[in-house]
Image 1 (cartoon, rainbow, N blue to C red):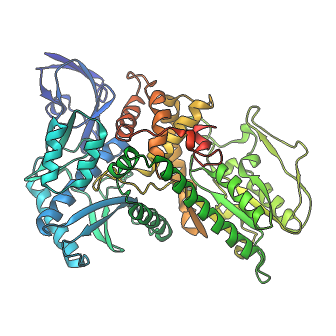
Image 2 (image 1 turned 135 degrees about the horizontal axis):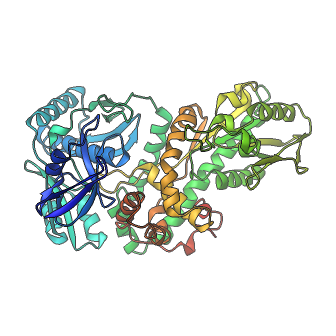
Image 3 (image 1 turned 120 degrees about the vertical axis):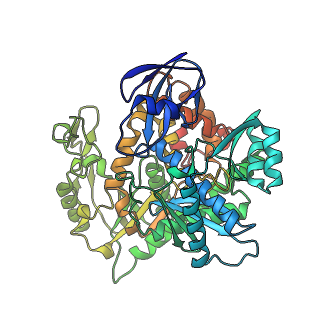
Length: 552
């Protein structure tokens, strides 16, 4: 017998060895408002079919938690793949990226003819049939060589390349009926769990809609994001041109000695984009009809805003302009006036954290040609200080305002739209783990933040992970609602970033102890970056956006 402690009900029970989590769930009478889809066993995410052979602590999870939502979405991807295989024989499915509160997917037919609304409806209807049949997902743990043979027979070269370069002795994969697929995380027990989703035409593919985090009984509200979609498309197009669509492709390129070339290309692509942005700013600045006066720059946490501003400033100088920078952080209200969460902790990402009335007043004075004393926020004392820093705009001078609230229209409501140039920086990973495993864009930024905060001595990995959900919630409220208003978007994702971050992130993530809640996320990230062949950072230029996070 084994003893299991359930964190949900705060009680312990004894079970025969080999009892599954699904069987235990019924015994614990764990009431949750929404169906439970997975669990954390000793702070490691597991599927409900996981069998227990030793004493464990267990926490059952529903889709409102990020780990539960990932389990649900992976299972949906397999459901969609199975339907495509059976309804459109010899078709290829590509689960490419999150967009519009869902996932954009390509379905490529064998004859390359376009996917039609009728095709999508047939696939959707078949998915519904599979859900009603409540078919089980079966998991197999086999020698990697055996898994490679399995996927070679199925023509899944993306999975073959990933497995050949991952260095794993054993690999697990799943089957649904007679269809096999690979996922780097757990799935729900059966298709009957997948009752909330939608499938609709989207550009030249389909949008797989997933449950709302707030109310998992319905699909998340659709949000049109044409500019974000365009940025993703651009990233994917470049990856296809480079022949680097998946992690297996990137690993093979590194093994073939192309790491240095890929670093140079990544830097060249980003610099080319920054040059274009600088030239557009110069053109707008010299427009006699509606001259540009203010450049507003924002983006989510760890998107690279600081380094981007420095590199943009250099290119603006090359265009004959003299940029002057101001950060919204320097206009923070004094710490005692900072808004708070219900639990009493400071809400540093709240718009009211910035004295936006003072900041807008100073911007208006600068535009009018006045000299302005600008503050500097002392993060150690929590006070806004005036230390003699003065700014004045003159001929050829242009104002750059950087910060998470820079695109909030309330910050510059008195400035004509024609006088503003808005830049949104994001980190949209174009590379897929394989054709059915897209990489969450927030993982890129979380790894950057963990490495940067740890090296700076600001936060441990455990602390960075613990605060990450608050960061994401704030971004959804204060930053992302304004991204589609930007004049231009800049993608700070780096072509082989995970391969470079791996050397830095692995030892930091291993410092998170298993007896804390954050271990689950650290374990997941370690498992994820394990798929990448590491690349030393010695050839990363000092001016690279990556240097903001890895140092040097």
